[in-house]
Amino acid sequence: MEPSVLVDRRDGWVRLVLNRPDRLNSFNEEMHRRLAAALDEAGADDACRAVLLSGAGRGFCAGQDLSDRVGPADLGATIDAFYNPLVRRLRALRKPVVCAVNGVAAGAGANIALACDIVLAARSAKFIQAFAKIGLVPDSGGTFFLPRLIGDARARALAMLAEPLPAERAEAWGLIWKVVDDAALAAEAETLTAHLATQPTVGLALAKEALNASADNDLDAQLDLERDLQRKAGATPDYAEGVRAFLEKRAPKFSGRSS
Ligand code: T3D
Image 1 (cartoon, helix red, strand yellow):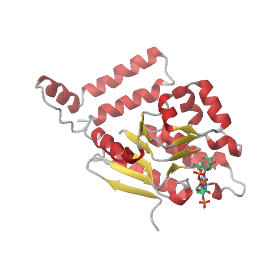
Image 2 (image 1 turned 90 degrees about the vertical axis):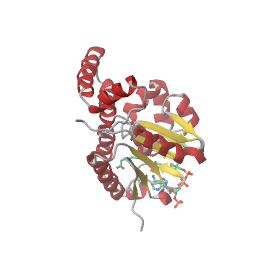
Image 3 (image 1 turned 90 degrees about the horizontal axis):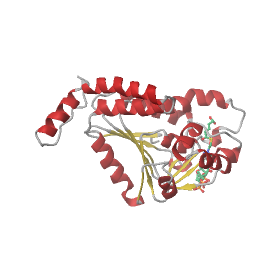
Image 4 (image 1 turned 180 degrees about the vertical axis):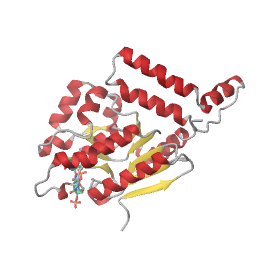
């Protein structure tokens, strides 16, 4: 049997593919464990400077595998054990995470996509806060990301109506970065991830840290944080290389190293 997460190591980056296509890549515990391990490995590997997450088959991810939920379950415990750590891992990973939403992203599947740094979606894809259809609350950061990305009015309607949001509207509303023709999605996502893998990795990680903190900070606190992170960025070899390359009128060659 094929693994539930495919790990495809490339030159400087890794492609992770959710691989339970007959269940629209919905999560069971095994897929959670494999994805967590793959993200930890990518995080620990200095040679890996960017991550691409996508799904096998016609869907991206349909959230929790509901066939594992026919009996009573403590959903707070499963969220504590699996979904919340996954969202925290994606946000904390000190390298960019691109998500290629190749088809429907429903329930936790939609919000895990939103936890990634740059989200591309196939034109035919849709995002569904499916939770209300089964009496649940948007989880995996949905109630955090949605109002911040698209505003309270739209967030409330998506959460309460569970209507599919087509990819083109998701882009128009600012929920995602970009819609791409279905046939072009894989190549465009790979080109973008490969590009990010050549960029100043430490600087990007510091930018990610600042953006992650922005939702909870007031302007003064954010200005102080930017100062502190800029101090760190300014001490990296990639900053020195970036300035040198600019002055020498050539393309920079970033190492991604911290020292
Ligand atoms: O439980 C906890 O730990 C708490 C955390 C919860 C997080 C959550 O994500 S709760 C929300 C769970 N997800 C859903 O409620 C979505 C359920 N799926 C759907 O509503 C629809 O499948 C879609 C709208 C996503 C796609 O519809 P469609 O018509 O394109 O496909 P389909 O025919 O419904 O699905 C294709 C197959 O995938 C089908 O199997 P079959 O009939 O071909 O054997 C379907 O049963 C299966 N599938 C889709 N989603 C799930 C699933 N099987 C198990 N769990 C799923 N979530």
